[in-house]
Image (cartoon, rainbow, N blue to C red; front, side, top):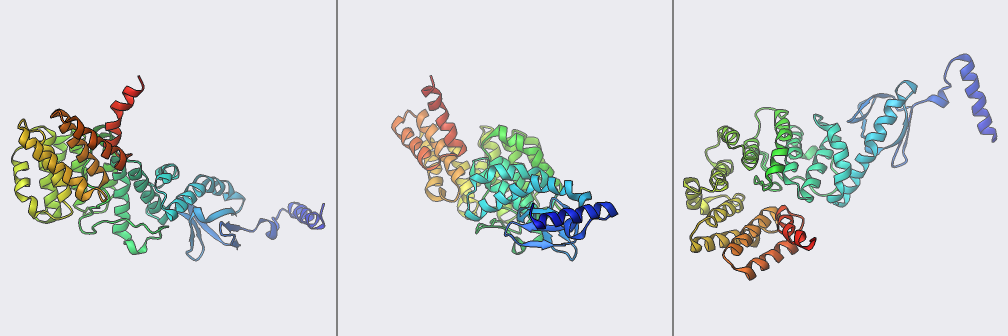
Length: 373
């Protein structure tokens, strides 16, 4: 036994005899991951948002390596550090290097703990969850964390966000729309599964809620097959001009197309196509093309294919999921028109350039099924 260890044992024994903890042994201490040691930090409280010190400083869990906060609170501290420290640290590291697909495991582990919270860690988790779900092609599931991100930024402002890495959420502060998540959904089951969480996120937003709430939830309801609910939501859009009003018109055309009955809304959208804002033109092209390929007339179907192919040609980099949907719609139309070589060419384009999108997986499913026989 070393002399120092022997002295510490003696001091501990003396402390136990007199019934008083020796200050040098039991003093509070926090060790940060950067190896900084905070001695006697005076911990006021701690929760999911971090450890609050007397004087106002807050240490988020991802920055803490270990800590000693007194016997009465030690077990709770250790449990929270174990549950949150490692996932938050991994999220921070993945965001720094822009590895958004690898965010999934730590983000999903932490997300339920931060629902309803507004701190810096909560925003980091919401943003990581949104981006990881988008990176894995789970667009419908990405809407709920996006709305939570939007609420955070509405209240605090993007300039106050301490987010690792270079990527920042792009959104319109006036409308709440983001080009990272167009209001179009392709997987009915996923849309239906996403609706309860999206509704809860909307309920937690401060009033007045941004117009994007009506657009996103209404289009999600349409995709889920809940048309009456969608129409109630769209009725709440008060904007008569601008991008949100255009999105309502596009949604009305979507309603007709998904029902297999293109009509007046599609005609109005076609007449206004050149007047639409640049942000909304990709969606309009997609739904107009999808309406045309539903025709019994081959000439109109060919026009529809051309409309659909404009989407990947013009917007394939910015809107990969929409481009993949348009390619797949054109591919299926060519198959129906017995243009096998054209359909196969589009299928290869879909597989090579739009892998991991919903429509690439859908197009590959029949081939994989046949290969497995």
